[in-house]
Length: 284
Image (cartoon, rainbow, N blue to C red; front, top):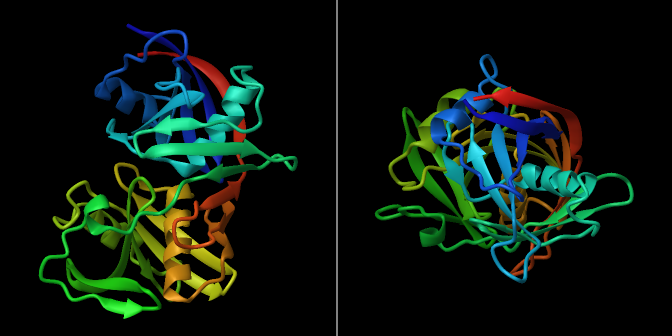
């Protein structure tokens, strides 16, 4: 039996268990992670975030992310904001801006004066092999300067904007997110054979050039109240398609995130809330 101290946090309703592994090595297995994330038999969370010592001299911390199914993933934007608030509140860093190494690359969260957190999420990646996405035999439709890929998903034909924010995303535009088939198309897209590493499925409703609504079926977690990398991916896709301006408010079911991108190789900047919920101890 392992006794584990943890902190529960949330960013726009995307909720996390945060573990400080800066003093002792992180040693939970997949079954223990699933128990921790279970909302009936554990603490309950969309993801488990692990704070580790820096793996290189040019970063301040290592940051590992595990989905509710126990699988480790590359990136989590809402989690990055909670990560920054956690290390500052715990006295692990006095700096308001930090560099953090993830499996998907280095990100830079910064605490703002208004209590929100801005995260430099790095530049989006559009090469299909970096997603990865198998487009063999498909004919894309160009809209703006970005492709929309036609794909048969179950009984539906959808048009997908495919990109990586350090993790894979497939974004489709819908007329109304309230009636979008998120819970049926989402899991079918997540496990579609053309996405070798599975994929996060975004459903984007454009309200005007600076305002959208978004729901995301997250790989390994199901639909969450908010997805930070999903908001970044949806905003970038909309900007490249010519639907959106360079700064956009993204309304999720858990709150609003602001996404800014200057285009080309510029980093995507995501600003939003992060909050401490409670601290606790659990036996696993």
